[in-house]
Amino acid sequence: MLTQSPTEAPAPLHWKLVVDAADPHAQADFWAAALHYTAEDNGALIERLLSLGALPGEATVEYHGRPAFRDLIAVRHPDDPCDPETGTGLGRRLLFQRVPEAKTVKNRLHLDLHAGAGQRADEVARLRGLGAWVLREVKEPAGEWVVMADPEGNEFCVQ
Image (cartoon, rainbow, N blue to C red; front, top):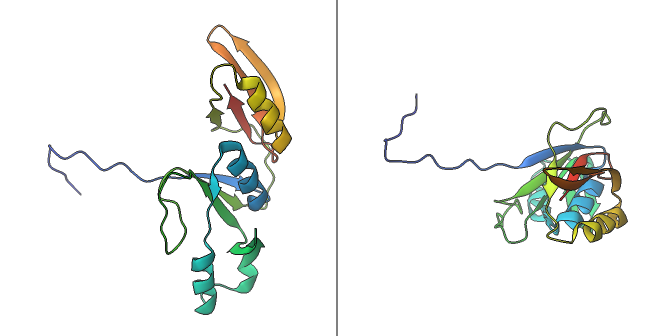
């Protein structure tokens, strides 16, 4: 069992939110635009793995003019650092991974986007222009928000 001294606080865990997707690259494009994030560029890592024979060519695709993994791609906050050798973000990230099955039920986890005072309607319109759609508008004593779905049907809220 690992122990730590009573005066040492545990280091926070690094994490990413992983989202199953039919088309991870389309989802990355949507969410990068929706959040004003940046799609990760793993091109140097992929080229290195291909040259070593550690990655088959069919496991890659061209994404915005650069090599990318066929079945996964992440977007990251543009102010967060990334590993220069792999292109992997070291901060706030969403990773989209290809899965064979379609989404069938309501999400148990979702993102809340905070548009800012008086900006919700404009933000909803912008997100609709990116391919999202409105599922319902909620008005409760605790607040108001719009429940939307991304291009693959994953729910999120705009407050």
